Length: 228
Image 1 (cartoon, rainbow, N blue to C red):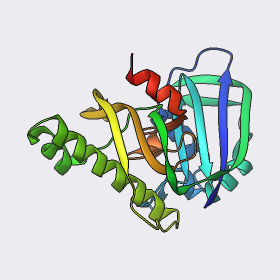
Image 2 (cartoon, rainbow, N blue to C red):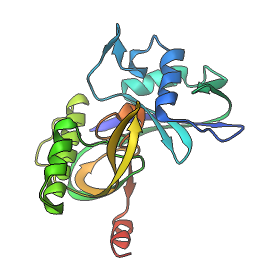
Image 3 (spheres, rainbow, N blue to C red):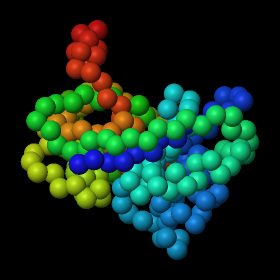
Image 4 (cartoon, rainbow, N blue to C red):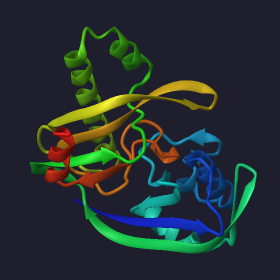
């Protein structure tokens, strides 16, 4: 399956210090008439994989549109000269734009990825299972199953029928954080899966707010990392 993606990066006259949620808030407020930018319809949340996702990648505000979301970003990406993020106003001096057709779906070979932003993997029920798990092997099995479920859910929203079994292996470590004044547990690290995921698309929970963005790694990179 081919996905069209539109990737927008923003640069200001000074370093932009903000969260992906604040970036989402700016676009959702500025262009409220586009439901894909904020995932709400008449004040009700739209429960589907977000077609517009907001991320801070190595300090760079990044917005990614997928299919219909890409068309929305094409319309509005240059309709502002400054952005207000958490009360700080940044003048936009440069916009980076990339429009791509990218493959998405099951493959015969394994592909290697790392999380460019923390993976918000566990809902409340699985969070308890993770902490009650007997050891590392059981925890890894739960995370592998969770990642498989994330990819299946994403595929369903994107109207892609997965034709066979997804095989994945995670190599991650816990990272504690906060979201809306609540302590959360996320994961950073790498994974391998027989599935193609376009660069910086998110997997897991809260991907519209920047969590779970993935970036491809070559097999050699993954092997070198494992031998450090």
